[in-house]
Length: 251
Length: 105
Image 1 (cartoon, rainbow over the protein chains, first blue to last red):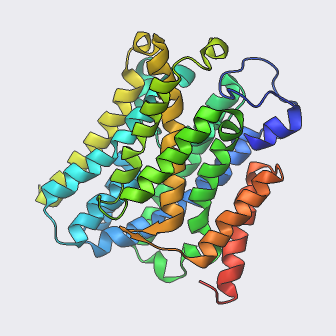
Image 2 (spheres, each protein chain N blue to C red):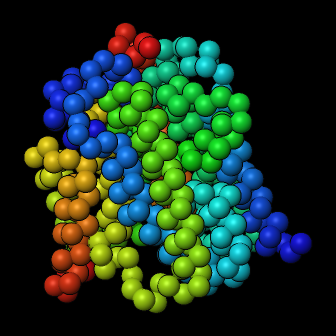
């Protein structure tokens, strides 16, 4: 993460797995940053709660989705299809398709979090964009695990409370957009992959290709699908430079 | 049970199963350098794409909201100045919020 690499002169490369030098931080940054991200992004649960209820879901159905599915893109997709009069089957299928990017995140996180037995069942619930970004931005394994927990729990609580609030009409008090909270997600994702972009040429090319693919197809593909399609940029990058960083990635 | 409840619970079950599946993939599969590299690059690709899509689109349309784009510009400036994460977020949201207060949106 920018803060830690800046302060501690760690090599900016391969930030997630360098088991060396823990940065000499006073405050536990993984907790502070995770909680901040959780609060700021979680508030947009208000928008989901409001959208869900206006699309015909009940308050309890909106809350069940946030509690059990806990992945914003899929939740908005189901509500969106229902609102536009689409079939429940199409809505469900679309929502589940959008959940597939969490599978790809899990591939990466499994190696870092290494959840065992029943813990894995709970950890799985927390595998989403925000937790992945915050976890992978940490300089060592211990910080990564702390960051995952902090982001997960704060975001889970905030998102669910906000969903309930939004379903009950809290959106009428004021829009999160007025506070600029719609910028928090995109700014946070950029900030959290920033060290990777600075460190590697392949990473930069993959990110640029991913952005081009996603924006280029966003008018013709259903909402959410362009982001999944962007994973092919990672596939191309892996085929083009398979083992570039592997010597350093051993644990 | 109503059809809507079935859709809600099926969505929840499907999304959860997909999360669990990623964590449960045998680690020896990741031993291959190409697969490992793919797993490393996937978050970069997805999060970059997500950031761009959230910043510049609304639904299926491009939506170049000046306040939001200015917020993203401020985030990039803060990152170039090596600001910590928290500062980047506050600067980005604060810029967008101030511009909206000023009537630019």
